[in-house]
Amino acid sequence: MQQLTVLYDAQCPLCSRFRDWLEAQALLLPVHLVPACSAQVHDLFPTLDHARTLEEITVVGDDGAVWTQEHAWVMCLWATRAHRGLAEQLARPQWLPLARGAATSAAGLRHLLHGAARTGARTVACPRGGDYPDHRVAPASPLPQG
Image 1 (cartoon, rainbow, N blue to C red):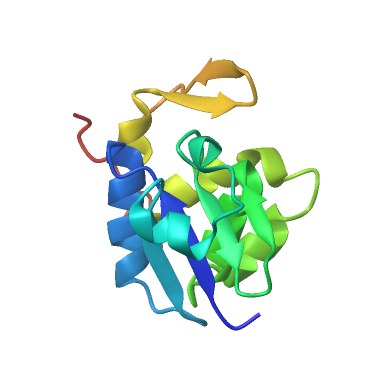
Image 2: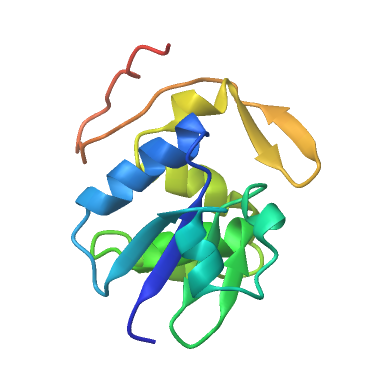
């Protein structure tokens, strides 16, 4: 695999902010960020279920592989220099349910989950908020939410 295409919902604040974060990362392979259901996506991937790409982030490899939901979040992290090791850990079955939260935390976006992390069909309240955008050695206070 030489490149990835990430399809995201341009109307979703979380997706758009994650796109901005991913765009700013040092990448280990090219990542093309394309709004889901755009004319460009229909041209690139005519057989893809385009309505479904609006429900959850979708990643398409240049080899035709398609990842959705937690697997797509893992692939986004896997493409980055700083988070490939984390992605390899999250790809394991026991860690996969944490992939979305880990990706949004890495991007400093947990506050956009509105105090909840989705796990499958149910919603679990986050006991405390806070984003940690830099790698601190000492304890840090959470950033203000809102």
